[in-house]
Image 1: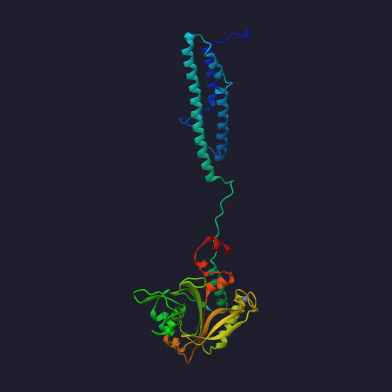
Image 2: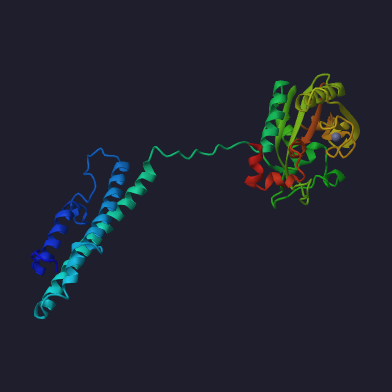
Length: 378
Ligand SMILES: [Zn+2]
């Protein structure tokens, strides 16, 4: 014990340590859970949540310093604890209890405020996450059109500019519209490749959008120019080039004196606008029950321009679809006189055109709804 220094009464020293703590701790009292202000700005205060959060975090740091100062190794309390062994043995137990009581009080009051502050900070952090205008926002992802829709719209734009109307109609049809009206009577072999899905009530999913042409001619009579894009169904096993459901566009032009020359001119103009002005067309004789004469239409490959490549399977030509002059029986069925009117019709698959244009190996990709695939057409 240093000489000349009057040793303070240990009990007094303990009380001094407690008082020093209480004095400093006073400013933290408002952060106690039962405190009215709860450590936050009162309602009506315009202090931002961000400011409150910063303040609460600073207070928590200060509280840590207070803990160190009043309970750490160099604290007054630590010094007082060392005195326990030095007080007279008869006073030791009482003194020890006093010191322990002070320590418990200091530690529990600090713990209480610390817990309350931490909970406020967690709440404030949640709140700032909700309303913080300084953080970069989450931009809503803009959608985009499906590759089939993109192709369908391109085709529609071309035909609308040529004076064609766009017709839409039902996907479930009667046998009459799907076959009979198209000059395909029952037991006709052409029903086979057009085989579709039937319901028990004599209805069927349409196997071509020609059904729309029948409806349109019945409704509007001649003259008319229309295209019918839409979904059709066939009993095909899915593979890289087939799907039991696919998109088709069919076109029809009925007027006086319509000839094969109009058909060739129209489809040639169409591929010029869709693929490019240098594209050539080729018509090969074919057979369809609803047209006479009938022709398959090819256009020169957009990739190799006829030289032969992987896309055109080395032929230099790509198949567009079928076409022909509307069969007189089809006109008769809808009440149009084939002696007065004639017309041409054509049809092609939108899926296959999309698959070609986008160089897809497998048309099934178009219907799998895999976002990783679809995003590429953004
Ligand atoms: Zn080619």
